[in-house]
Length: 144
Image (cartoon, rainbow, N blue to C red; front, side):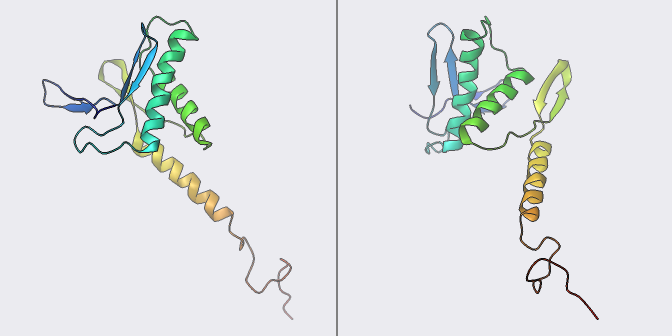
């Protein structure tokens, strides 16, 4: 499709529309170019948008919902689809409560926890765990 629509709110706040789902038409549209620079969307962004819009489709067609609001459960389901499709471990999403009983994802905390987990895995997979380079068979050297 063409570049993403750029929505400007009365407050001056703007947002890009990555895709949408039509309940009546049972169709998904995904914009494959960025709103400002008109560059091709990255694969990760495309897949994330597809999983998001497909989650709306599942809500309406599989679960029989008449609406598909952006709840915490909705975002958790979309994330599960995304990580399943990529073959990557599911990230735990951390949430911040906003005024009016709304919630948003705390991306700083979500990404920090994931980076820490990745660092632990990287460190624990190194060959020198408890071994010195001079250890041939993994046993400690004897000193006399």
